[in-house]
Length: 560
Image (cartoon, rainbow, N blue to C red):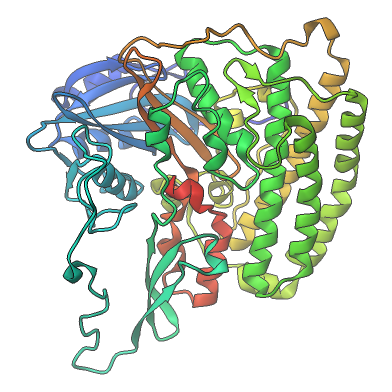
């Protein structure tokens, strides 16, 4: 494999021994902050007091190098509430640790982690919204997915799903009812963008404050597409009923990538081996999905920037359609694939295999000339460059603090890709490279996606070579998985894959039954969207639209 590992940090970090996490050293570092220790499948976790969260997290970030808060999970037990902070490192992804914060049932109050990691802002708001835990020192603790008028917290144990959500008329008051004019002359103006607008990439409402013609502040109002995906997965069985749901998170051709996130978590939790042949098929189909997703990202971004239904969008749709046809041949579906199974894939390659390989190779052979067309029409276009170069700037330190991943992070020069840094599937056996750009702007994020299409094509080509020569008698598509899976009670795991938009992670906790007691989705779009105010302040409205488009969000995954 020709992949180059990211450069290790030069400073000596506490709790690292020969590249492995020394949890005893971390416990010594945290000292009296630790009141307990837990064993999770992916990493050990330390239990800390709810009023000492920031002290513990600052130590782990600054002294031990855990600079990536990848996920925050909140849940309720019979005797307590609990928040779990899943920590890892951008330059050493396999080094993980959890911080568990229990709070009482009577007073579920915990210290906010926002002062340490900015990404905790939205994650803790979601925990408050759905579970009911309150976070002291949080900069803006209010509901994020549900309306402010909502009664109760849907993931709490005593939540009544049949209670009427009735509020009086006063609670539906106009948010602009207060006089926004000051006594002196002011150019400040409030502008609603969305939620029904093509440039918001879904039902996203941007509350935008303008100072003259520049953006003074922007607040993302999400939740219009919240579909209770986590609750539905908690009501489904591991073995059969959960797998169809992931296709519906990032529904922009990324279904197999989503399915793999759940499959990886469940397989590691239940200690299920996946045959090597099935791993190659998974890797090939996942990269086909990545190409289809990036094609649509580039096409819709051109719509945002140029402002009309341009040829670029049609070119991107044309090439994405070819990928969709290949995926349809493989899975039988064009969007909601439901192709992966725990332990492998649903079925083998379509017959005759030679036709499938030829069709896929024809697409790969034509791809370089197609990409040249995109560069002629997009990246070398003077208007496009004026709109994208040095706009939507996201510095690396900010990107890390907000938990940005995928092309958004790599467009800010962050060398982070789970396919290499936390290998799964067949990626570590293949020859490909992680793409980064140092521009930190809208232009860099487009370049990253276009170059990643080339790398995905290299991966697919190598997978086809392997599949063509694979002995027929060794083509095992699934391992022997029990019909009913019942992981041991209190087994906990967080696992992630490199989705089209970034790190797509799943946390699950087992309770000894055939259904998870807690199922948490770590959406890369959710974390990436948090960066929009940082990218947009001081910019003009057209730059705000371009910055939003460069994030390549899909609201089905943001809201879940």
